[in-house]
Image 1: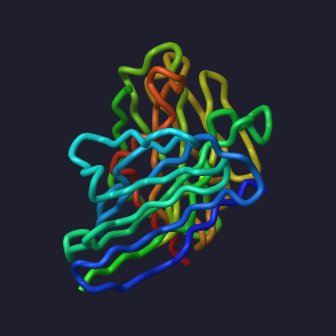
Image 2: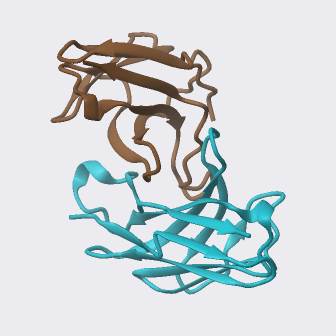
Length: 121
Length: 113
């Protein structure tokens, strides 16, 4: 149980195009989802917190108009990279926090998706 | 959040115990110690967490010192598939602080045959 999927797993696009990445919680409800970005040989950096039915909260330095986040249901959040440029090439990872918890011991446990490798040419 | 310090890399022979240390000398009373790991090109995976008591699950054991200023993650019988970056995260999660995880640089563990 507690599986998070991401689609696509990898994508290559031309500079200037937009790319949408989906994050789904497959067997639990996630009122909160998180989007992280990871550049090569670096750690994960939080981009934004996505709450179902409300606007996402972006971390400092992350452009909300460039990285559009939609969390329209309890099992789906999407990240759209608009007008992508080569510097946006990165590994994008989502995570979901189950609410209610999947088990008494997993109250603050987050479940991560497998990541999406974005390459912008 | 309390800052954590981990060695950048460690080696371990397959079949032996891997002991990964983490210093968190500024930890506060309500902060938990969490461990995640990330295998190359995959999303992070939860391992274990604890507050002050030692914890054990099917993946690992977590030993927290009595003063809570440091902890050790123990993989009792490391396998090649345990090669990954291990992150020690100290956090209190609530509606005020939020629920996101703050990843540091972690320890890159290499398990060798």
